[in-house]
Length: 321
Image 1: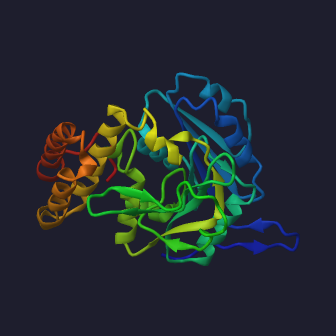
Image 2: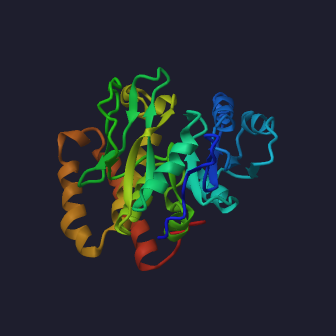
Image 3: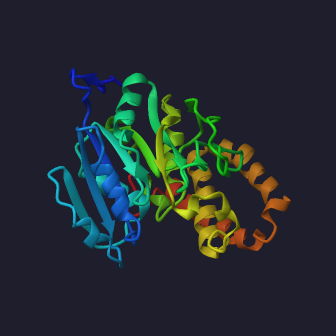
């Protein structure tokens, strides 16, 4: 890939560089949307646009989004909930930027965030996907510094719950970064086909895209200078103890997409000699206690999907991959 991104100084400390498309997808996010939009419009980097897609919110999200009128700001109101993958695909398709920067509707950017994104891609031509240091609302507790995927596709976030004392301030190559604040070149987004909408409504679409990016020999990097406040409690260390985390809905989508992530991306030999043995080890471990009957439904669903997608070649509705 040619590295067209650059940051230059015009003598007045005003950075110029590639157009960055800030992508925001909302679904019932009225309670947190204003601080997110205010922070984007306060960026000190001049070359950006905002594409906001509302996924048929039932609260005041769309009303709040329409309070802002700027020439570089576009709103798309979907008639149905297109999920995280579908909503982002819609937004990127309507954007013009050389770099696309996905920002959750509850994420608050520092004023230098877009400048840092542009610099990162200018400095690293091998950079495929860029992830932020995500911080809790207190500004002191780390939520995300990239993540690791184990043999059974369970994910772990580096740094989560740690007090930030500079211990996570080195750029690091990681297995994946989460889509709360997540950037890549449009050329790569197009080559990857965007997000795979088979992962709708949520979970593993970003992990899947990071894996496919790394298979194309690009780096997935945690970039600590891109620091973002992400007060959503679902990303906090305490969320694993909450009722929402333990709900059947969470487990259904999490494990359904964890399994599909493996089945989609493995060869037949990989399934037989790597994926299935790793899954069996987890299934019969103490970690799966209380989930085994539930998981049988997931396995049945995954096998049906595998036959449909891989053997019969039936695409997912709206799928781009």
